[in-house]
Length: 135
Image 1 (cartoon, rainbow, N blue to C red):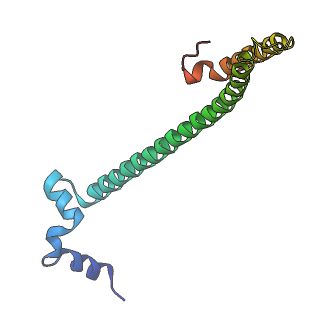
Image 2 (tube, rainbow, N blue to C red; image 1 turned 120 degrees about the vertical axis):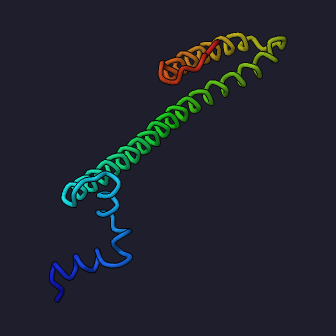
Image 3 (tube, rainbow, N blue to C red; image 1 turned 180 degrees about the vertical axis):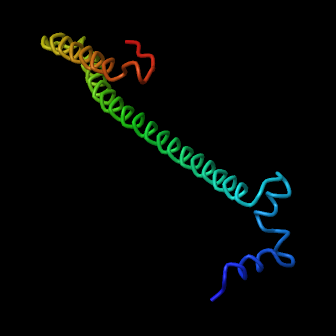
C-alpha cells in the first residue's frame, strides 16, 4: 500500500512535476493547489454544461426538422388529392363539345370538389409553412 506522501512524491518528483495540472495552474495563475483544484473542477463543469447545451440544442433542431417534414407530408397528401381532381376536370373538359348533356354537370361537380380541396390545402398550409398558395 502506498501512503499519501508516496503518491504526492510520485507526481511531484522528476519530470512529472512539470506536467501535472496543479503545478501548471499554480505557475500560470499563481494560485495554491486547493484553489487550482477548485478552478479545474469548475472549468470541467463549465465544459460539461456547454456540451450538454450543444447536445440538447442539436436534438431540438432535429425535432423541428422532423415536425416540418411531417407537415410537408400532410401538405403533399392534400396536394395529390387536388391534382387527381384537376386531371379529371381536364379530361372532362375535352368532352364539352360532345353530345353528352351530363358533361357540364360533372364538370361543375368536379370544379366544386377542386375548390374544396384547395380550401383544405390552405388550411394545411397555415402560418407555419409560409408557402404562397394561389388558386
